[in-house]
Length: 136
Image: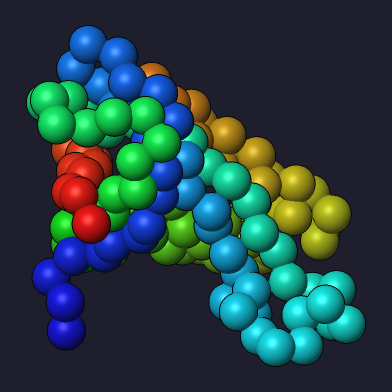
């Protein structure tokens, strides 16, 4: 199993110590031979900010964007798994005391402080979740 996650991209812009790389994010069925008839496939462009020494890179160059696999797992944990647990636990506990409507609303409402906390700590998280680029 690879220790890193790589994705091919094109350098969009270069600033003093930051490289902006445009990647094409595809859904799981984005490579399917039937995607033109299916209508389910989804492809979106994303701009990744990479803080790295910019020497040797130029705009339009094709590069690999790299993220350590452990950081990818941590991102999934923070972005999906923990909020899911918070939602389910709140729903299970509140359903004993409240109606279904209020339990559902409360379960969704408790996610607001969690995501606000992630938002306020985004600078600290950006130091933890860092991308690297390498030439192809």
